[in-house]
Each structure stands twice: as structure tokens, then as C-alpha cells.
Image 1 (tube, helix red, strand yellow):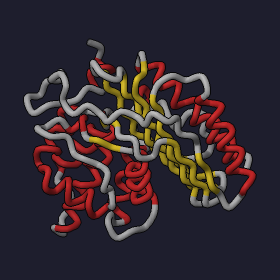
Image 2: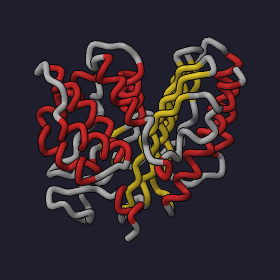
Image 3: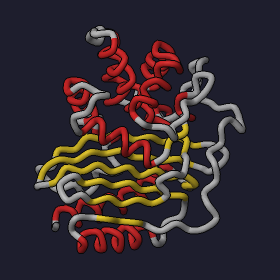
Image 4: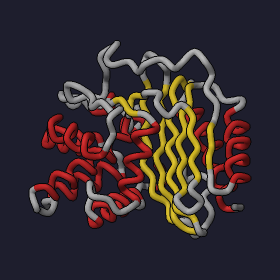
Amino acid sequence: MTHRRRRGLVATALGTGFLIAGVAVAAPASAATPTVSCTSAKAALATKLKTDITAALANRKGTIAVGLYDRSTKTTCTLRSTTHYDSASTVKVTVLATLLWDAKKHNRYLTTTEQTLAKAMITKSDNDATTKLWKQLGLTKIKGFLSAAGMTQTTPGANGYWGLTQIDVHDEQRLLALVTAKNTVLSDNSRAYILKLMGQVISSQRWGTPYGAPSGVAVHVKNGWLQRATHGWRVHSLGTFTGGGHDYQMTVLTQDNSTMSYGINTIQAVAKVVHKDLAAS
């Protein structure tokens, strides 16, 4: 098993990367084929994004969900925003947010050990570090953060299977909104810390939503990838972007991919047109 592939596997309470068959299978997508929906303060931009995202996905196989929000132009695009997916490593942003939220409640800073684990978890997608923090927090605190954050459609993975947390585009976009703008859930320092680590992700894991981002735009990313017997590869990417007159966040979740690379290419086809259209607006 390659080092890169192992990183994206689900860690269990036993520390192994292998899964029990049939655990927490994601709900099937709706029978009706959903379409991309976009709104914007700039009507022409909404039309362009809808057309270009639809075209980017026209010949792509798999079940694909998309979320985009640009504060600068009040632009929102969605596709399958409430379809649930196994989170894989994208849940690590939620784990870090929970850790910081809980520390704020207790009026304390992160310990040196917590900082070391957090950095490894986000920048290298380290599974062992994630498992330690997941166990330390426990489901009560994780659920407490999800409630405070308004992430009502997210269900933490049971029995230590954090990578089988059920997520959807709506809640991931909600999380990215909390990370990127002032709010009462996460302190300014907490938000800056999350963005700092997402900005330091190692180069081999900076694929996905950053693809095609214009030079000069600050990029923060966290990806997830997981292969299971059902629905093939799950390949996901969360990204936030600031610069060029824009302040936007993007979530692309995919499953039923034949390979990890196929899923990455699907996400990047979407990201490329989003960055291009926003830069031109």
C-alpha cells in the first residue's frame, strides 16, 4: 500500500486502515438527476457559472456534489447540496474546529501536544494524529460543536471510524463560512489558526479545489480520499480563496469514482471554471 494512499484511509479505534464491510454506507443519490443552481448579485455571473459547471461535469461519471459561495458578489452555486457522503479526511477540519471551540469554552490555549497533532492532521492528513484528537474530544464535544455550528446534517462516525462521518455540501460550506468570517462560534484566533494550517498543506495534497486559482489568490485546502467496496473511491476537496477582489469558498464531494485520480480530475474540472469565471467577473 502506498504511503499516499494509506494517508487517506479511515483510522479505526484499533489503529488499522481497513474497514469492516457494510459499515455506515452513504445514502444513495436521488433517482432524478439534479441540476446546478446558481444565484448572484451579478446575474450574468450566475448564468455563466451554471453553464460552465454543468459543462465541466457533462461527461464525468460518479455522484458529484458542489458548493460555491463568493462573498464579494453574493454568488452561490449548489449541486446535490444535501446528498450525504463518507467524509474521509475532510472531517479533519471539523476535528480541529471542535478542538479550538472547546478550548475557547474552557478559556485555554492548545497544548504543545495538541498543536503538534493538529498540524500533522491538517498539513499531512495524518490519521494517527486525527485518531488521538478524536478520542480526546469524544462524540459529546464533537456533536456539541456541530450543533453550535449549525451543521445539523453531519453525523459523526461511530466506534472510532471518524472517516465514515456523514457530511454534505451544505454543512461543509457552513463550516468554511465559519472559518472565513467573524462569528460567535469560532474566535478570530481560532479561524486564523485553521486557515494557517490549511494554507500549509503539503504540495502532494494541494490538488482539487485550488486547481486553476489565479496567482496572487491565497489558497487554503483540505482534501479527503477513501476507497470502499461500495461506491468506489470517495474523493473530496474543501477550499477557501481570497484575492483578486474575491472572497470565496468551494466544496466538491464525489463518490462512485473508478480511481482516486478520476475523482481528482472531476473536482479540478469544476474548480478550473469556477476560478476562471470569478476572476473574469
